[in-house]
Image: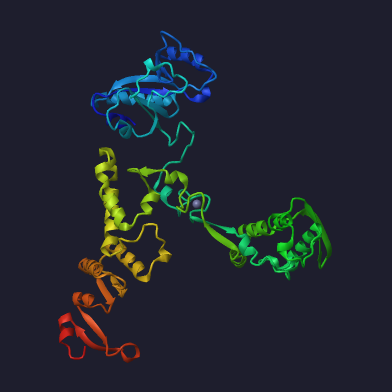
Length: 482
Ligand SMILES: [Zn+2]
Protein backbone atom coordinates (compact mmCIF):
# COMPACT_ATOMS: atom_id res chain seq x y z
CA UNK A 1 0.00 0.00 0.00
CA UNK A 2 2.79 2.37 0.92
CA UNK A 3 4.46 1.67 -2.44
CA UNK A 4 1.28 2.42 -4.32
CA UNK A 5 0.86 5.73 -2.55
CA UNK A 6 4.50 6.57 -3.26
CA UNK A 7 3.91 5.82 -6.94
CA UNK A 8 1.70 8.88 -7.17
CA UNK A 9 3.57 11.81 -8.75
CA UNK A 10 5.86 13.62 -6.35
CA UNK A 11 4.12 16.48 -4.60
CA UNK A 12 0.62 14.96 -4.78
CA UNK A 13 -1.32 15.84 -1.63
CA UNK A 14 -3.18 12.96 -0.03
CA UNK A 15 -5.06 12.24 3.15
CA UNK A 16 -4.65 8.87 4.77
CA UNK A 17 -7.86 8.06 6.55
CA UNK A 18 -9.37 5.26 8.60
CA UNK A 19 -13.05 4.61 7.87
CA UNK A 20 -15.08 3.94 11.00
CA UNK A 21 -16.98 0.78 10.24
CA UNK A 22 -20.74 0.97 9.93
CA UNK A 23 -21.75 -1.25 12.79
CA UNK A 24 -20.45 1.44 15.08
CA UNK A 25 -23.21 3.68 13.82
CA UNK A 26 -25.11 5.19 16.68
CA UNK A 27 -22.00 5.44 18.77
CA UNK A 28 -20.43 8.15 16.63
CA UNK A 29 -20.87 10.96 19.16
CA UNK A 30 -19.03 9.01 21.85
CA UNK A 31 -16.42 8.02 19.37
CA UNK A 32 -15.79 11.63 18.38
CA UNK A 33 -14.89 12.64 21.92
CA UNK A 34 -12.67 9.55 22.24
CA UNK A 35 -10.92 10.50 19.04
CA UNK A 36 -9.95 13.88 20.38
CA UNK A 37 -8.42 12.29 23.45
CA UNK A 38 -6.59 9.80 21.20
CA UNK A 39 -5.09 12.73 19.37
CA UNK A 40 -7.16 12.75 16.16
CA UNK A 41 -8.63 16.15 15.50
CA UNK A 42 -9.84 15.73 11.94
CA UNK A 43 -12.65 13.60 10.56
CA UNK A 44 -14.55 13.56 7.33
CA UNK A 45 -18.26 12.97 7.56
CA UNK A 46 -19.91 12.14 4.25
CA UNK A 47 -16.94 13.72 2.54
CA UNK A 48 -16.98 16.95 4.55
CA UNK A 49 -14.01 17.82 6.75
CA UNK A 50 -14.52 18.70 10.40
CA UNK A 51 -12.09 19.74 13.11
CA UNK A 52 -13.31 17.96 16.22
CA UNK A 53 -11.59 20.44 18.51
CA UNK A 54 -13.82 23.13 17.05
CA UNK A 55 -17.13 21.38 16.39
CA UNK A 56 -18.76 17.98 16.72
CA UNK A 57 -20.59 16.98 13.54
CA UNK A 58 -24.27 16.24 14.06
CA UNK A 59 -25.41 13.02 12.48
CA UNK A 60 -28.91 12.06 11.52
CA UNK A 61 -29.45 8.59 12.96
CA UNK A 62 -31.88 7.80 10.16
CA UNK A 63 -29.21 7.87 7.48
CA UNK A 64 -26.07 5.90 6.87
CA UNK A 65 -23.03 8.09 7.26
CA UNK A 66 -19.52 7.68 6.03
CA UNK A 67 -17.12 8.70 8.75
CA UNK A 68 -13.39 8.68 8.18
CA UNK A 69 -10.73 9.57 10.71
CA UNK A 70 -8.06 11.59 8.94
CA UNK A 71 -4.90 10.00 10.29
CA UNK A 72 -2.48 12.11 8.31
CA UNK A 73 -2.21 14.62 5.50
CA UNK A 74 0.87 13.95 3.40
CA UNK A 75 2.66 15.20 0.34
CA UNK A 76 4.03 12.33 -1.74
CA UNK A 77 7.82 12.22 -1.92
CA UNK A 78 10.50 9.59 -1.46
CA UNK A 79 11.53 11.31 1.79
CA UNK A 80 8.04 10.86 3.20
CA UNK A 81 8.23 7.06 3.03
CA UNK A 82 8.63 6.41 6.74
CA UNK A 83 5.95 8.91 7.67
CA UNK A 84 3.52 7.44 5.13
CA UNK A 85 4.35 3.94 6.37
CA UNK A 86 3.53 4.95 9.94
CA UNK A 87 0.28 6.60 8.93
CA UNK A 88 -0.80 3.64 6.80
CA UNK A 89 -0.16 1.31 9.72
CA UNK A 90 -2.06 3.54 12.11
CA UNK A 91 -5.03 3.78 9.75
CA UNK A 92 -5.09 0.01 9.22
CA UNK A 93 -5.09 -0.55 12.98
CA UNK A 94 -7.89 1.96 13.55
CA UNK A 95 -10.11 0.58 10.81
CA UNK A 96 -9.39 -3.14 11.09
CA UNK A 97 -7.35 -3.66 7.97
CA UNK A 98 -8.82 -1.06 5.61
CA UNK A 99 -7.89 2.49 4.83
CA UNK A 100 -8.85 5.29 2.51
CA UNK A 101 -6.56 7.43 0.47
CA UNK A 102 -8.23 10.74 -0.28
CA UNK A 103 -6.59 12.75 -3.03
CA UNK A 104 -8.16 16.22 -3.21
CA UNK A 105 -6.57 17.13 -6.54
CA UNK A 106 -5.82 13.83 -8.23
CA UNK A 107 -3.31 13.62 -11.08
CA UNK A 108 -4.29 11.61 -14.15
CA UNK A 109 -4.25 7.82 -13.63
CA UNK A 110 -4.17 8.23 -9.85
CA UNK A 111 -7.04 5.75 -9.45
CA UNK A 112 -5.16 3.14 -11.51
CA UNK A 113 -1.94 3.76 -9.62
CA UNK A 114 -3.61 3.27 -6.27
CA UNK A 115 -5.67 0.25 -7.32
CA UNK A 116 -8.22 -0.82 -4.75
CA UNK A 117 -11.83 0.18 -5.07
CA UNK A 118 -12.77 3.73 -5.89
CA UNK A 119 -15.12 4.54 -3.07
CA UNK A 120 -16.56 7.71 -4.56
CA UNK A 121 -15.55 10.83 -6.31
CA UNK A 122 -17.00 13.33 -3.95
CA UNK A 123 -19.78 15.42 -5.29
CA UNK A 124 -22.45 12.76 -5.31
CA UNK A 125 -22.63 12.23 -1.59
CA UNK A 126 -25.87 10.72 -0.44
CA UNK A 127 -27.99 12.94 1.75
CA UNK A 128 -25.87 16.05 1.60
CA UNK A 129 -27.12 17.71 -1.52
CA UNK A 130 -27.09 21.23 -0.15
CA UNK A 131 -23.54 21.30 1.16
CA UNK A 132 -21.77 21.73 -2.14
CA UNK A 133 -19.36 24.28 -0.70
CA UNK A 134 -17.49 21.62 1.30
CA UNK A 135 -16.96 19.21 -1.54
CA UNK A 136 -14.64 19.27 -4.44
CA UNK A 137 -16.13 17.37 -7.36
CA UNK A 138 -12.83 16.17 -8.68
CA UNK A 139 -11.30 14.59 -5.66
CA UNK A 140 -10.55 10.89 -5.56
CA UNK A 141 -11.25 8.48 -2.74
CA UNK A 142 -9.76 5.01 -2.94
CA UNK A 143 -10.31 2.27 -0.41
CA UNK A 144 -7.55 -0.22 0.17
CA UNK A 145 -7.91 -3.40 2.15
CA UNK A 146 -5.22 -5.43 3.86
CA UNK A 147 -7.35 -8.52 3.42
CA UNK A 148 -8.89 -9.33 0.08
CA UNK A 149 -12.16 -7.87 1.14
CA UNK A 150 -14.59 -5.37 -0.22
CA UNK A 151 -15.59 -2.86 2.43
CA UNK A 152 -18.77 -1.99 0.54
CA UNK A 153 -20.43 -5.36 0.16
CA UNK A 154 -18.60 -7.31 2.83
CA UNK A 155 -17.34 -9.96 0.37
CA UNK A 156 -14.16 -11.45 1.65
CA UNK A 157 -12.11 -13.74 -0.55
CA UNK A 158 -9.31 -16.08 0.37
CA UNK A 159 -5.69 -15.42 -0.53
CA UNK A 160 -5.16 -15.53 -4.31
CA UNK A 161 -2.77 -18.30 -5.22
CA UNK A 162 -1.81 -20.16 -8.39
CA UNK A 163 -4.29 -22.90 -7.56
CA UNK A 164 -7.12 -20.35 -7.39
CA UNK A 165 -6.96 -20.34 -11.19
CA UNK A 166 -7.08 -24.09 -11.71
CA UNK A 167 -10.40 -25.83 -12.15
CA UNK A 168 -8.62 -29.04 -11.13
CA UNK A 169 -8.15 -27.65 -7.65
CA UNK A 170 -10.96 -27.22 -5.14
CA UNK A 171 -9.47 -23.77 -4.49
CA UNK A 172 -10.27 -22.69 -8.04
CA UNK A 173 -13.08 -24.94 -9.22
CA UNK A 174 -16.65 -23.71 -9.50
CA UNK A 175 -18.34 -25.27 -6.46
CA UNK A 176 -21.55 -25.86 -8.41
CA UNK A 177 -20.10 -28.15 -11.11
CA UNK A 178 -16.85 -29.02 -9.31
CA UNK A 179 -14.88 -27.56 -12.17
CA UNK A 180 -16.49 -29.56 -14.98
CA UNK A 181 -18.23 -26.57 -16.56
CA UNK A 182 -21.39 -28.57 -17.01
CA UNK A 183 -23.97 -30.15 -14.79
CA UNK A 184 -25.96 -33.31 -15.31
CA UNK A 185 -29.61 -33.42 -14.45
CA UNK A 186 -32.21 -36.10 -14.84
CA UNK A 187 -34.28 -35.04 -17.82
CA UNK A 188 -38.02 -35.52 -17.91
CA UNK A 189 -37.87 -36.05 -21.67
CA UNK A 190 -35.40 -38.90 -21.27
CA UNK A 191 -37.25 -40.54 -18.38
CA UNK A 192 -40.49 -40.47 -20.37
CA UNK A 193 -39.70 -41.09 -24.02
CA UNK A 194 -43.23 -42.11 -24.93
CA UNK A 195 -46.06 -40.57 -22.88
CA UNK A 196 -48.65 -42.72 -24.67
CA UNK A 197 -47.35 -45.76 -22.77
CA UNK A 198 -49.42 -47.01 -19.81
CA UNK A 199 -48.43 -45.73 -16.39
CA UNK A 200 -46.77 -49.00 -15.39
CA UNK A 201 -44.28 -48.87 -18.27
CA UNK A 202 -43.93 -45.17 -18.91
CA UNK A 203 -40.87 -44.52 -16.71
CA UNK A 204 -37.98 -45.83 -18.79
CA UNK A 205 -35.50 -46.32 -15.92
CA UNK A 206 -38.13 -48.02 -13.73
CA UNK A 207 -38.93 -51.23 -15.54
CA UNK A 208 -42.11 -52.72 -14.12
CA UNK A 209 -40.61 -56.15 -13.59
CA UNK A 210 -38.33 -54.80 -10.87
CA UNK A 211 -40.53 -55.62 -7.92
CA UNK A 212 -39.51 -52.93 -5.47
CA UNK A 213 -40.26 -50.05 -7.83
CA UNK A 214 -43.35 -51.64 -9.30
CA UNK A 215 -44.83 -52.05 -5.81
CA UNK A 216 -44.20 -48.36 -5.22
CA UNK A 217 -46.01 -47.51 -8.44
CA UNK A 218 -48.89 -49.80 -7.45
CA UNK A 219 -49.24 -48.04 -4.12
CA UNK A 220 -49.02 -44.53 -5.53
CA UNK A 221 -51.48 -45.36 -8.32
CA UNK A 222 -53.87 -46.72 -5.70
CA UNK A 223 -53.39 -43.55 -3.64
CA UNK A 224 -54.52 -41.44 -6.60
CA UNK A 225 -57.11 -43.95 -7.77
CA UNK A 226 -55.60 -44.28 -11.26
CA UNK A 227 -55.14 -47.49 -13.20
CA UNK A 228 -51.64 -48.74 -14.05
CA UNK A 229 -52.95 -49.40 -17.54
CA UNK A 230 -53.94 -45.78 -18.20
CA UNK A 231 -51.75 -44.08 -20.83
CA UNK A 232 -49.60 -41.62 -18.90
CA UNK A 233 -50.59 -38.64 -21.05
CA UNK A 234 -54.25 -39.20 -20.14
CA UNK A 235 -53.62 -38.86 -16.40
CA UNK A 236 -54.38 -35.53 -14.71
CA UNK A 237 -51.32 -33.26 -15.09
CA UNK A 238 -51.24 -32.58 -11.33
CA UNK A 239 -51.00 -36.31 -10.61
CA UNK A 240 -48.42 -36.78 -13.37
CA UNK A 241 -46.29 -34.11 -11.69
CA UNK A 242 -46.50 -35.93 -8.36
CA UNK A 243 -45.43 -39.22 -9.93
CA UNK A 244 -42.42 -37.45 -11.42
CA UNK A 245 -41.44 -35.11 -8.59
CA UNK A 246 -43.00 -36.55 -5.44
CA UNK A 247 -46.37 -36.53 -3.75
CA UNK A 248 -47.68 -33.62 -1.72
CA UNK A 249 -49.25 -36.00 0.82
CA UNK A 250 -48.15 -39.23 2.45
CA UNK A 251 -48.92 -42.50 0.69
CA UNK A 252 -49.58 -45.83 2.32
CA UNK A 253 -47.05 -48.37 1.01
CA UNK A 254 -47.49 -52.10 1.43
CA UNK A 255 -45.23 -54.73 -0.05
CA UNK A 256 -44.35 -58.36 0.45
CA UNK A 257 -40.94 -59.70 1.30
CA UNK A 258 -39.89 -63.27 2.04
CA UNK A 259 -40.43 -62.40 5.71
CA UNK A 260 -44.02 -61.36 5.15
CA UNK A 261 -45.91 -58.16 4.44
CA UNK A 262 -44.27 -54.84 5.28
CA UNK A 263 -45.86 -51.42 5.28
CA UNK A 264 -44.99 -47.79 5.81
CA UNK A 265 -46.68 -44.44 5.33
CA UNK A 266 -44.64 -41.63 3.89
CA UNK A 267 -44.40 -39.19 1.00
CA UNK A 268 -43.57 -40.74 -2.35
CA UNK A 269 -40.18 -39.38 -3.37
CA UNK A 270 -40.92 -39.08 -7.09
CA UNK A 271 -39.20 -40.83 -9.98
CA UNK A 272 -36.84 -37.95 -10.85
CA UNK A 273 -35.71 -37.05 -7.29
CA UNK A 274 -35.21 -40.78 -6.70
CA UNK A 275 -32.86 -41.05 -9.69
CA UNK A 276 -31.02 -37.91 -8.70
CA UNK A 277 -30.55 -39.10 -5.13
CA UNK A 278 -29.36 -42.54 -6.19
CA UNK A 279 -26.97 -40.98 -8.69
CA UNK A 280 -25.25 -39.17 -5.82
CA UNK A 281 -25.52 -41.94 -3.22
CA UNK A 282 -24.69 -45.08 -5.16
CA UNK A 283 -21.30 -46.74 -4.84
CA UNK A 284 -21.87 -48.79 -7.97
CA UNK A 285 -20.41 -47.42 -11.20
CA UNK A 286 -22.89 -49.51 -13.16
CA UNK A 287 -25.88 -48.05 -11.36
CA UNK A 288 -24.49 -44.55 -11.82
CA UNK A 289 -23.93 -45.09 -15.53
CA UNK A 290 -27.44 -46.51 -15.87
CA UNK A 291 -28.93 -43.36 -14.31
CA UNK A 292 -26.72 -41.12 -16.46
CA UNK A 293 -28.48 -42.48 -19.53
CA UNK A 294 -31.47 -40.46 -18.35
CA UNK A 295 -29.50 -37.32 -17.59
CA UNK A 296 -28.95 -34.37 -19.87
CA UNK A 297 -25.83 -32.26 -19.74
CA UNK A 298 -26.24 -28.53 -19.51
CA UNK A 299 -23.72 -25.72 -19.23
CA UNK A 300 -23.21 -24.98 -15.56
CA UNK A 301 -25.32 -21.90 -14.80
CA UNK A 302 -23.06 -20.80 -11.94
CA UNK A 303 -19.82 -20.46 -13.91
CA UNK A 304 -21.33 -20.34 -17.43
CA UNK A 305 -19.11 -23.23 -18.40
CA UNK A 306 -15.89 -21.49 -17.44
CA UNK A 307 -15.27 -24.05 -14.66
CA UNK A 308 -13.81 -21.48 -12.26
CA UNK A 309 -15.37 -20.00 -9.16
CA UNK A 310 -16.62 -16.43 -9.29
CA UNK A 311 -13.79 -15.01 -7.16
CA UNK A 312 -11.17 -16.34 -9.56
CA UNK A 313 -13.06 -15.07 -12.58
CA UNK A 314 -13.22 -11.63 -11.01
CA UNK A 315 -9.44 -11.24 -10.92
CA UNK A 316 -8.28 -9.05 -13.78
CA UNK A 317 -4.80 -8.67 -15.21
CA UNK A 318 -4.53 -5.60 -17.41
CA UNK A 319 -8.32 -5.50 -17.45
CA UNK A 320 -8.78 -9.09 -18.61
CA UNK A 321 -9.93 -12.14 -16.66
CA UNK A 322 -8.40 -15.58 -17.03
CA UNK A 323 -11.62 -16.86 -18.59
CA UNK A 324 -11.47 -14.17 -21.28
CA UNK A 325 -7.86 -15.10 -22.01
CA UNK A 326 -8.83 -18.77 -22.19
CA UNK A 327 -11.30 -18.02 -24.96
CA UNK A 328 -8.55 -16.54 -27.12
CA UNK A 329 -6.79 -18.56 -29.77
CA UNK A 330 -3.12 -19.24 -29.14
CA UNK A 331 -2.21 -16.69 -31.81
CA UNK A 332 -4.42 -13.97 -30.29
CA UNK A 333 -3.21 -14.84 -26.79
CA UNK A 334 0.39 -14.40 -27.91
CA UNK A 335 -0.52 -10.98 -29.29
CA UNK A 336 -2.36 -10.12 -26.05
CA UNK A 337 0.66 -10.92 -23.90
CA UNK A 338 3.11 -9.28 -26.27
CA UNK A 339 1.44 -5.94 -25.88
CA UNK A 340 0.96 -6.23 -22.15
CA UNK A 341 4.21 -4.87 -20.70
CA UNK A 342 3.62 -1.41 -22.08
CA UNK A 343 0.35 -1.14 -20.13
CA UNK A 344 1.77 -2.18 -16.77
CA UNK A 345 3.06 0.08 -14.05
CA UNK A 346 6.75 -0.22 -13.28
CA UNK A 347 6.03 -2.22 -10.16
CA UNK A 348 3.69 -4.65 -11.93
CA UNK A 349 6.15 -5.02 -14.77
CA UNK A 350 8.87 -6.10 -12.35
CA UNK A 351 6.54 -8.70 -10.87
CA UNK A 352 5.26 -9.94 -14.23
CA UNK A 353 8.48 -9.94 -16.24
CA UNK A 354 9.50 -13.58 -15.78
CA UNK A 355 5.94 -14.88 -15.96
CA UNK A 356 5.25 -13.01 -19.19
CA UNK A 357 8.47 -14.38 -20.67
CA UNK A 358 7.41 -17.91 -19.83
CA UNK A 359 3.86 -17.44 -21.17
CA UNK A 360 5.16 -16.00 -24.43
CA UNK A 361 7.70 -18.79 -24.84
CA UNK A 362 5.03 -21.47 -24.41
CA UNK A 363 2.55 -19.78 -26.74
CA UNK A 364 5.44 -19.30 -29.16
CA UNK A 365 6.21 -23.05 -29.20
CA UNK A 366 2.57 -23.81 -29.97
CA UNK A 367 2.65 -21.29 -32.81
CA UNK A 368 5.85 -22.82 -34.19
CA UNK A 369 4.15 -26.20 -34.56
CA UNK A 370 1.22 -24.60 -36.41
CA UNK A 371 -1.38 -24.65 -33.63
CA UNK A 372 -2.05 -20.91 -33.27
CA UNK A 373 -5.68 -21.42 -34.31
CA UNK A 374 -6.54 -23.57 -31.25
CA UNK A 375 -8.27 -21.76 -28.40
CA UNK A 376 -6.75 -22.17 -24.97
CA UNK A 377 -9.96 -23.61 -23.53
CA UNK A 378 -10.11 -26.33 -26.16
CA UNK A 379 -10.49 -29.69 -24.46
CA UNK A 380 -7.78 -32.26 -25.08
CA UNK A 381 -10.31 -34.95 -25.96
CA UNK A 382 -11.54 -32.93 -28.96
CA UNK A 383 -8.10 -32.59 -30.56
CA UNK A 384 -7.14 -34.57 -33.64
CA UNK A 385 -4.27 -37.04 -33.41
CA UNK A 386 -2.00 -34.67 -35.32
CA UNK A 387 -2.89 -31.76 -33.04
CA UNK A 388 -2.20 -33.77 -29.87
CA UNK A 389 1.10 -34.92 -31.31
CA UNK A 390 2.12 -31.36 -32.14
CA UNK A 391 1.15 -30.16 -28.66
CA UNK A 392 3.41 -32.80 -27.15
CA UNK A 393 6.15 -31.63 -29.51
CA UNK A 394 5.67 -28.03 -28.39
CA UNK A 395 5.99 -29.16 -24.77
CA UNK A 396 9.20 -30.98 -25.64
CA UNK A 397 10.83 -27.93 -27.21
CA UNK A 398 10.07 -26.09 -24.01
CA UNK A 399 11.52 -28.79 -21.78
CA UNK A 400 15.02 -28.43 -23.25
CA UNK A 401 15.71 -32.17 -22.80
CA UNK A 402 18.68 -33.72 -24.61
CA UNK A 403 19.52 -37.31 -25.56
CA UNK A 404 15.88 -38.24 -26.16
CA UNK A 405 14.62 -40.42 -29.02
CA UNK A 406 11.34 -39.10 -30.39
CA UNK A 407 9.22 -41.33 -32.62
CA UNK A 408 6.71 -39.36 -34.70
CA UNK A 409 3.98 -40.78 -36.92
CA UNK A 410 3.21 -38.45 -39.82
CA UNK A 411 3.46 -35.18 -37.89
CA UNK A 412 2.80 -33.18 -41.06
CA UNK A 413 -0.67 -34.61 -41.50
CA UNK A 414 -3.30 -31.92 -41.93
CA UNK A 415 -0.80 -29.08 -42.05
CA UNK A 416 -0.60 -26.37 -44.69
CA UNK A 417 2.70 -25.94 -46.52
CA UNK A 418 3.66 -22.84 -44.53
CA UNK A 419 2.94 -24.55 -41.21
CA UNK A 420 4.77 -27.63 -42.37
CA UNK A 421 7.92 -25.53 -42.87
CA UNK A 422 7.61 -24.23 -39.32
CA UNK A 423 7.06 -27.74 -37.99
CA UNK A 424 10.18 -28.97 -39.80
CA UNK A 425 12.18 -26.10 -38.30
CA UNK A 426 10.93 -27.21 -34.89
CA UNK A 427 12.02 -30.78 -35.55
CA UNK A 428 15.44 -29.57 -36.68
CA UNK A 429 15.64 -27.50 -33.49
CA UNK A 430 14.93 -30.56 -31.35
CA UNK A 431 17.63 -32.47 -33.23
CA UNK A 432 20.12 -29.63 -32.80
CA UNK A 433 19.50 -29.65 -29.06
CA UNK A 434 21.02 -33.16 -29.09
CA UNK A 435 18.04 -35.45 -29.66
CA UNK A 436 17.21 -38.13 -32.22
CA UNK A 437 13.99 -38.01 -34.22
CA UNK A 438 12.59 -41.03 -35.99
CA UNK A 439 9.82 -39.80 -38.26
CA UNK A 440 7.43 -42.01 -40.24
CA UNK A 441 6.41 -39.81 -43.16
CA UNK A 442 5.38 -39.69 -46.83
CA UNK A 443 5.84 -35.95 -47.12
CA UNK A 444 8.55 -35.03 -49.64
CA UNK A 445 9.50 -31.86 -47.80
CA UNK A 446 10.13 -33.80 -44.59
CA UNK A 447 12.23 -36.37 -46.47
CA UNK A 448 14.39 -33.66 -48.00
CA UNK A 449 15.12 -32.27 -44.53
CA UNK A 450 16.11 -35.69 -43.09
CA UNK A 451 19.70 -36.60 -42.25
CA UNK A 452 19.10 -40.25 -43.12
CA UNK A 453 16.21 -41.95 -44.87
CA UNK A 454 15.28 -45.61 -44.60
CA UNK A 455 13.00 -46.28 -47.56
CA UNK A 456 10.62 -49.18 -46.94
CA UNK A 457 9.07 -50.91 -49.92
CA UNK A 458 8.89 -51.89 -52.62
CA UNK A 459 5.05 -51.67 -52.50
CA UNK A 460 2.61 -50.61 -49.81
CA UNK A 461 1.29 -52.83 -47.00
CA UNK A 462 1.87 -56.55 -47.58
CA UNK A 463 3.87 -55.87 -50.72
CA UNK A 464 6.42 -53.94 -48.64
CA UNK A 465 8.53 -54.84 -45.67
CA UNK A 466 11.94 -54.56 -47.31
CA UNK A 467 14.49 -51.83 -47.05
CA UNK A 468 14.81 -50.69 -50.65
CA UNK A 469 17.20 -47.83 -50.07
CA UNK A 470 18.99 -46.17 -47.20
CA UNK A 471 21.12 -43.05 -46.92
CA UNK A 472 20.99 -39.30 -47.30
CA UNK A 473 18.16 -37.74 -49.35
CA UNK A 474 20.65 -37.47 -52.25
CA UNK A 475 21.45 -41.21 -51.99
CA UNK A 476 17.75 -41.99 -52.18
CA UNK A 477 17.27 -39.77 -55.22
CA UNK A 478 20.17 -41.55 -56.93
CA UNK A 479 18.95 -45.01 -55.92
CA UNK A 480 17.58 -47.22 -58.75
CA UNK A 481 15.37 -49.22 -56.41
CA UNK A 482 13.72 -46.34 -54.47
ZN1 LIG B 1 -19.74 -24.33 -12.71
